[in-house]
Amino acid sequence: MPHVKLLSLALALLTGVWVSAIAHQRAQSYAYRFLRPIADYTVIFNVGLLGLFFARYLDVNLPGQFFKEHAAAFRNLADLAISVLVVGLLVSMLRVVLGFRDKDLPLLARRCIFAALAVIVAAYGARLAVPATSGFLSWINPLRRYVLENAIILEIPLLVVLLVQAARGKDRAKMMRTFAYLYLSRYLVTAVIVAVNLSVGMREPWRLAASLCALVYLNSMPLIWYRLSFWEFARRSASAFGTEQALAELSARYGLSQREGEVVRLILGGKSNKEIEGALYISIHTVKNHIYNIYQKLGVKSRYELAHLVLQRAAPDPRGPARSDSGQR
Image 1 (spheres, rainbow, N blue to C red):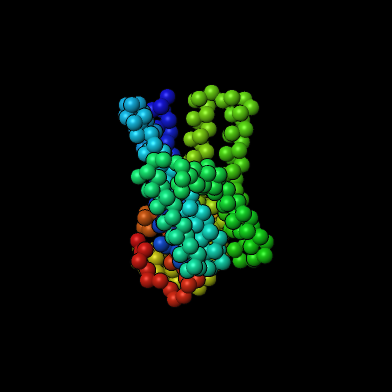
Image 2 (image 1 turned 90 degrees about the vertical axis):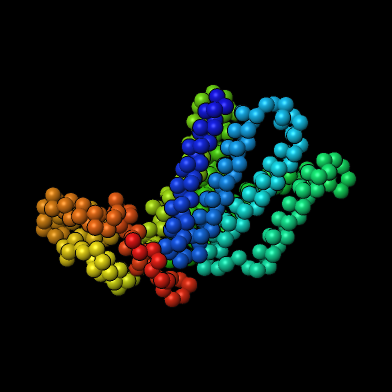
């Protein structure tokens, strides 16, 4: 069973690495301030999973006597890692909330965060060097037990603030609400799993399956959010002129025919194959042939990737002048 636990963590990590790569690619393709911290949040979460994976791996493969002899050191290192990761997650979520308003973390806040991290690292380093928990180091245990281990729930008020901002906003309201509800749902999923386990007493295989599904869901939330709301926002943000200009550039570069360009426009408008058939007065077989040729020429595999390719060229840069097109395929 320990090896099954390791395998489930490995699967969750593979999902996390994949989602992290996509999230960072999106942050590089679009200039919106909220995308970078979302990617950073995903990476930090998976760094925590990686630490948990190695801890369990060592627990399974190293002799028990080794852990007994170094228990205090391992506990201190684990506590330090958890503390730093929790602070990183909270800071990333704060940056997301500010990013939706096109704001950055204030310089004073950054300095306070770095100072707090320095104090935490110094305190744990001192406790590692001086294992005694009495005297001036005795405050570390309650800090860990009552503050740092539960600090992650401070995300909840941040997400509530995001919901309040969404209620007052217009342009990004749906996108902000979707993000807030998605990330709040993590706590509901966790609570349901814990409640079921306490009330029914799930067997170990079911508990492992539930934990794996929960971890995969937590890692997949950025992708779910992209599909539910971000692409709609990006499509609205891209002006008709910008989209036409991007499509003209792609047509010239990849040799799209006039008819294929018309098909792309209809796809970006959310039209199905059947609707494209009626709009262009061609057979459904011809529609599928055009779409296949478009995918082959542009090097994409789905409508999702096609929309991303066009919209990343057409989306305006909210921070100023247009970026250089470093993401050309």
